[in-house]
Amino acid sequence: MQIRNFSIIAHIDHGKSTLADRLLQATNAVTDREAKEQLLDSMELERERGITIKASAVTVFHTHNGEQYMLNFIDTPGHVDFGYEVSRALKACEGALLVVDAAQGVEAQTVVNTYLAVAQDVDIMPVLNKIDLPGAQPEEVAMEVEQVLGLPAEDCMLVSAKTGQGIPELLTAICERFPAPRKSLIPEARALIFDAIYDDYRGVVIYIRVFDGTIKVGDKIRMMGLERTHQITELGKYTPKPTKVKQLGAGEAGYLVAAIKTLADVRVGDTITSELNPAAEPLEGYEPPRQMVFCDLYPATTTKKGTDFEDMRDAIEKLSINDASFTSQTVHSEALGFGFRCGFLGLLHMDIVQERLEREFDLEIVQTAPTVSYKVDIRGKGGEITEIEVHNPADLPDMGSVMAIKEPIARVEIMVPKEYIGDIMKLALERRGIYKTQTYVSETRELLTFEIPLAELIFDFYDKLKSTTAGYGTMDYELSEYRQDNLCKVDVLINGEPVEALSLITHRDKSEARGRSLLVRLRKQIPRHQFEIPLQAAIGGKIIARETIKGFRKDVTAKCYGGDVSRKRKLLDKQRKGKDRMKSIGSVSIPQEAFMAVLDVGE
Image (cartoon, rainbow, N blue to C red):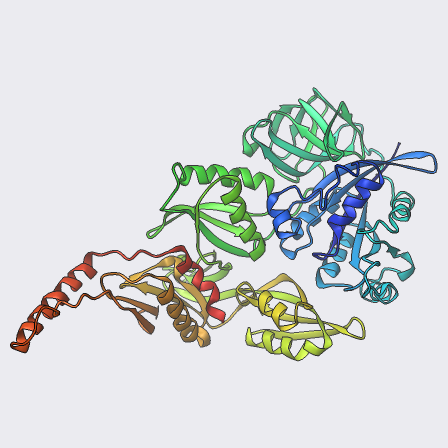
């Protein structure tokens, strides 16, 4: 039997999941009765948002020229934040279907996914989808693919995943144009772990691609990186229903269950080999992902029964098996207690992880505003200079010892219609962006490249880009370097007490405006108390902005009518003393929305 392994990659919303549905139906893997839209997007969150979050691996069978082919394919996410899922999927494949919307053309993420596939030395087949739409321009988009990506226009396959047009021809092209998996280089078994999920009943379920040898049920296996051994209790493939098999040979992909209960026993990118006859060298794994955005997650203080730090630790450990691209470490905050400092690949990734923790593990979470990591040069007592990495403004050392603060700079590629170029230039320059290049894509669109500090990107840059370009602009970014600038830490004091979760690092020229804007938002979010609450923004010991939340007042002079004014003054004086005493012992309750107010400061 011939084997073909390929991934489906594309910009978000270009029809990958719908194309996967049609391939499942065309190969009779699912009946018309079982078929539903985005069948592989099994997570409730994916169906709700209409996006793919997790890559899904499926095996189908197709007969071509009288010979049966086993097609192992992986439907991948399209959003920039889930690029790590795409790179892992490509490592397990020999081919990639690059899906391009025939109405929208090449987008920013299309370019990035092409580079990912080229870097992994994967054969790319461009597929122009949605040719049934009235606005489709397959000829123009095929030329765009050739011009921007360097893939021949005549190689483009024309399909409509919605109507099924061109799907039989696409299956033929997959069998004929994609290469077969390489033969085993060594007789010993070697398989790459490209994904894993946690199952409450079976423990950790591992997705593997076998490169060398054969893996059978009952084999004793060893994880080469972690040096742990297990016995295989079940092997199988998703067709798309789980189907048990006795063995997996070279070139095949499937899942493995070995009663692995502890989450520390599995690492995505590790190599599995036989314990009795081990391979000498492991397969090349994955580069660890580079987290871009950091925030703190704490169990909510007003909790449901049983929601606490221990539950949250278990939930984060289980989710990190399913999503290997976020990191976590324990932190403690005076205001919020024990929690976790988590690193994410982007804002959407952060949002998805928080929502999955709340839904899948029934947690209530308080999340602080996102920050980026900074590199700080500090002078020691002996005069030596050392560099440390700071993920949270609260961890910044005393400014007296800080010699320099370097911020991460992102290289941003923006695909935009020509009529919006001026607006995008203005937006990027407002965010301290540096213009680099401009590339002609087609008669209507250009690719602009800027260098923009990552801290300016993570707030609302993407939202502003979409609203400025009426939804037609797309962007992609990658970290290029750390660069020194005139940065400072702005502390926020509520009722005279600094609240570390609200502090921020910003450019000194923007510090006063950012601080004032944040305090205005906090004033709206924090409820009034019985006493007056001062809100202050400070750089070191210098107050740069102040707002006041007025306290509730009772008219204590209502009963005084006529008589001497000193009676009223005496009552007001008594009230003022009570307010001052309450202010010194009263605590200010800060709602979750107040921590997220830091996000909206840019407006």
